Image (cartoon, rainbow, N blue to C red; front, side, top):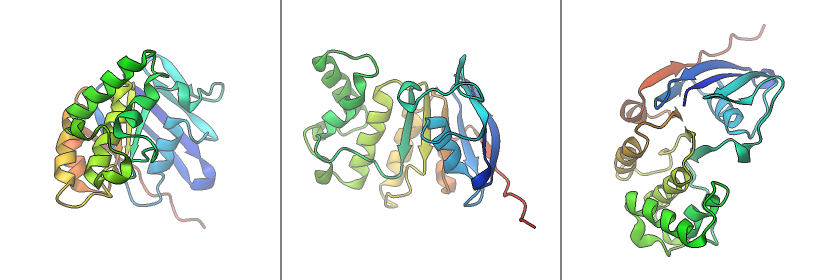
Length: 211
């Protein structure tokens, strides 16, 4: 789906507009503090901008008249911290959001979760809890959780920043595979992430210095 977005948050000095084509991974670049993560929070539904709009396909996520809550946007969000539920197994973490996505049967939720864990190469760890996973294994599980529900849009906020140099290239390659054909917005300071994952780049200029 095509994403047309304009986010205005004056108190943070953010006034950013961009478009992501259907199935494209668009990277937002720019210096620290220009509002890249703020933009993702607005599109995800965690922050309500003072002005602007976000339209995903035929749906308006927000504008001056409308606001769809985060839980109803069908937007997946992946950050550098996997944010897995510590008391749930890897399989249960992936299955958690599937009821909201319309997968009613518990057996079907488990099947979908296991399938995605297998696709990400951690199906054999389905019964482990987050503290029993390495950083790379936890991030693979988080990717599976984001994609299992079939989001219309994927947001990536420094998804590989917390991984060591030996693990990041493997996860980067996996992301490139599973994001193919999915509309995605990426924020990363890692040149390797942008080169491997992005189809296009929008640079957010720094705001002019205040008088």
